[in-house]
Image: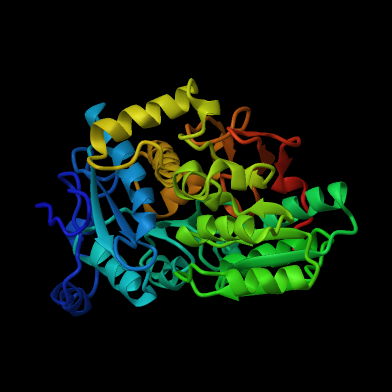
Length: 410
């Protein structure tokens, strides 16, 4: 399909980005999945495998487009190597602006018009898209930490790539209790399920936050909230903001001399979006409960998985950033998706989810060393964390791996 260059990058040849209202009207006019689409799976060994992606390529969370960059680079790498059992991956990428209605419309277009075998969706709004995809019996891989995405009884065709956010809160709670059981704990995060799940995890882990403050995504200046936390005596802070707000908040903390023990949300502790803009000195001593490698961290310069990621993003990612942690997230998810497709003989639907659930001891380029993919709680493949501490140059181990299988499940 032709490329429509509407973002900062020129998307690869199979990508389609739909922004015009006319495309949404066309989607709404379509109903049912045609016979050709239904036959696009394993029944035709020569047909391409169609993978749809709906991501925020515009709007306040447009930075998440980097996740799609990583996934696209991996799919292109697989195609260059001959595809999945000889079948090429035909991926279709649509912009949803992080609007649940647009994501749902995109899902319908990807299934009804493009015949998607698997659909990848980004964020908590994936929960709103799940009912349609499950009704159509199309496999969904959701980039979301929300607990609802772990309910595979209610949504049997949905699988989540990220760990459940509640688990991260539990791991942080364990570390707080070991380090400072009398801590006055505060949480500062975005006003959505991300922060809610972190707070629930802290509580499940035996730590009840004394202060929980939230702001809308896109709000960057959190000076008043930091002053409120300091006035309340908060000496241990879980910072769960995202995007530019994370680095800006760390700089503000340094400027006003507020230095609590700080835990950074795992997906906002990377060099490209947080440490670089904030400055290494402002992050030194911070901790994060992590599960993926940051390709910009010098610790992983010689890591085989990171080197493969960098090579593929440089080769196939157009203007994608080889230092992007978010791109590494997408790259790892694409690798897991391809592994499940290999296990399902290229079929989507129930065959794909069965292959996903059967994964056991599978290496993945994104994971921290000595960790492999395996189906865990909620049929999530990523469920092992490690506490890391920033030493001014790199993230270093600050604890043993913690498996969500060993955490008390709510």
